Image (cartoon, rainbow, N blue to C red; front, side):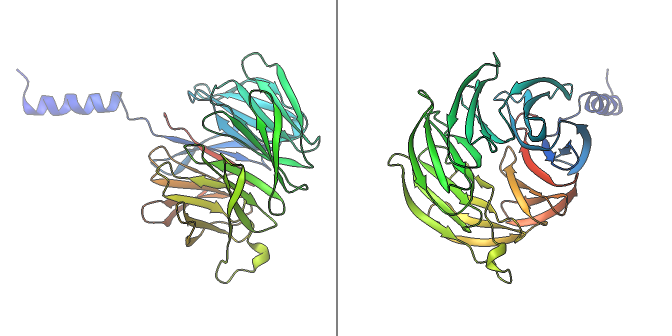
Length: 324
């Protein structure tokens, strides 16, 4: 017969043998050629991995078993196995890949090639190049709608959004927006696209059904010169409540009401905030701050920065594993 003391010891042993798995955030460090791995419970870096030269865009496979990495100066996309934390493959990418997006079919990877003014489409299973699509000058941002219908590329010098039909791999429409567009983010229902214009200092709201702009947002951060307010990364909550916009060298993240497009607040983070990602329950937002070399952690409910985590030099991209 088990005593209360015995049951307590057994419970403790079970707890020790089956620890809870923390969620992990992955950060690409552009100047160090490394990837930092952050435990989202302890908010500490738990590992640093050497990867290719100048890692920038990063994203997860749909089952979160692999991480794709734009190794820009190696002109390739690396494939990192998350179980072993080893590079297991490379994919053809075209020259200077910076941002990319994976189709919901988990096979077709759309890659922006800044130096060649093209978008390369690669099958991640066969490693075949399915298409190379001519776009505007200096393509950078890349997004695929959640319903899989559209791939959108931003060309910085041409100040355009290029709307690519994912069945034909052909551009169906070009939309001119503000100067130097950098990033596109779709709403979860694929009906709205948000596009940042870095030098224009604006964010443009596109009605996807009509392929027309409906709103243009500008930002005025108190005490910050307007020329330092440079929107780059955008993250949307799945419930449609908030949009978070990284405002570059202004060192702030704008909080936007995603329904009314009202600017609700500006949150001070690290220097040159670049990209951002929500964790799996959307309680925390992680931002990469290139110049200060850290990641800011924002409490979404409180709309407050709660911690800064030192990572490598010039952190660029961040993704949180929703399944870990």
